[in-house]
Length: 220
Image (cartoon, rainbow, N blue to C red; front, side, top):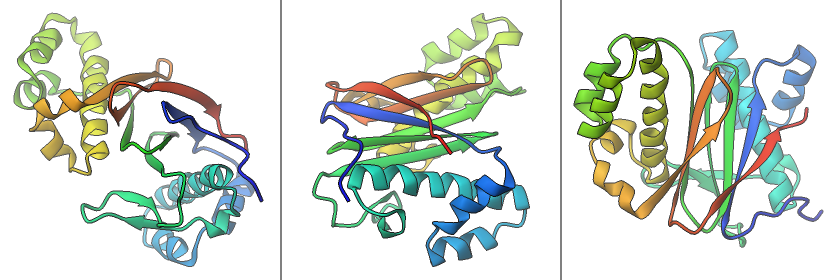
């Protein structure tokens, strides 16, 4: 089996995954999970959360298998010392990935040879957006939120948030640690992902010499 997808060294591929699918489709994703992933899925208390985990994890397997040229079940994951997910040592092309999901949408980012962080948030009301921004964002970002009409603040807040969380994930930090270290962005590049009115997304990757390639929605 040979790879059916390639990603350039200066590219970041972004995939979208719909999490609200039929039972038949969901079962196809469950069928390609590893035994450990099935156990983890069973630990979710809420059925919807378990279902979305299976779909997002199965989608990740399906996507990575096409880059690696391996069957979905042969994709083996590990975690670094800081808990960031990655692939096993049998990854000569140096693929790195990151995932995020919110609401009914997941994002998956894939690169070669550079750390990456992806985040997506469903747009929703953030009652204390200004107060949170004053605590965690830069003074310029806080002023920007204060100057906006109240109806626009929640989306603007979340747009900054996904960039900050993507930065933290790229560096293998908790989001709170990442928010507290704003200067670290100088060695990373942030790209917004346009997802329509209902969601905001961002990808953060090391360096400045890369571009986003939108792969679209993963086909079932």
